Every structure is written in structure tokens, then in C-alpha cells.
Length: 198
Image (cartoon, rainbow, N blue to C red; front, side, top):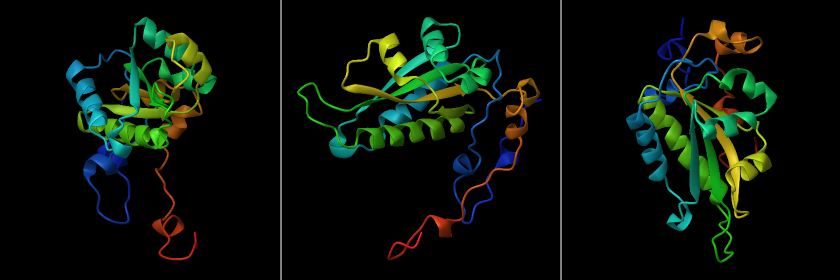
């Protein structure tokens, strides 16, 4: 039995787009679901059209679909806690920032720009009926070695992509977290309108 995303919509302090309020990061994915090519292409296209400093577009994506060698390379290098649930996702995506150009010019905002691209990817994927879960728990140097990334590139995060599955298939404590209430700090804790008050 999967969880209804609309039922998990955020309780927002101001109205926001449903594609944002209903977006959440599950760990229960359908292990039989095959990721439709068009939906993945749409999410990647949304990432491609993200803003970036001086239009440098310093993002790269390594796609590993479940059942491929690329998926296995990524999965093997996830942190143990992530490996407990991420094997059932349809695809794993390594989000890579280009930190320097070929000539050594530093791209100061590369990781920020990559973050915007991944956010666009996530929102478009949700719009397409998919779910994503961002992960920082992985071995970046092992990913570098596995995919022969040049030194000027850095694996920043990994995104799990797929169709929502049955939370009962998750081991604890992940099963309980899947249906736990969604919370965020109030706006008053994160917004300042003058001197640093937060």
C-alpha cells in the first residue's frame, strides 16, 4: 500500500504551488517500476534550464537505471543507511558540479547553481508523477574513481528517482519515518527584515 502524496501536502503559512507543497522525499519505492524515458528527460530538461552565474551551466548528471552497471557503481558507494532502502528505486542520479573550467578558471557559484538545477529536476519529476529523495550520504571520492571524474568536477549529491512504493517493505526506523508528520521551521525563524535577528 503506497502513500498518497496529496494527503502529505505541507501545511504552509502562505499558499504555494501544489507541485511544491505535495513534494516530499520518500524512502519506499516500487522495486518493479520502470522509469519512463520521457519523464526522466523532462526532469533533466528542467534542470538544464535552471539559472546559473554568467550562464556557466556547471552541472552534470550521471544516470544509473536499476539493473545497469552505472546503478550498481552508484549504489555500492552510498552510505550504509541509504543502501538499506535505495536498491528499489528506478534510477540513481549523481549530481556533479564543474568547479573549474579546462583553463583553471574557478566557477565560484558551481555548487549553488547545481543545487538550483537539482531543485528544478525534483519539482519537474514530481509534476511528472515521480518522487525523488536527495542524498548526501555517499563516498564522493569512490564515485570519482568509479566514473573517472576529472579533478575539476565534484560529485555533490545523489538523487534517488522512482515511483512511490509500499512503506511496509521498509526496515525500521525508515518505515515509521515514511508516515511521520512533515515539519519545517516557521518563517519567523529563517527570515530577517533588518539586523541579524534569526
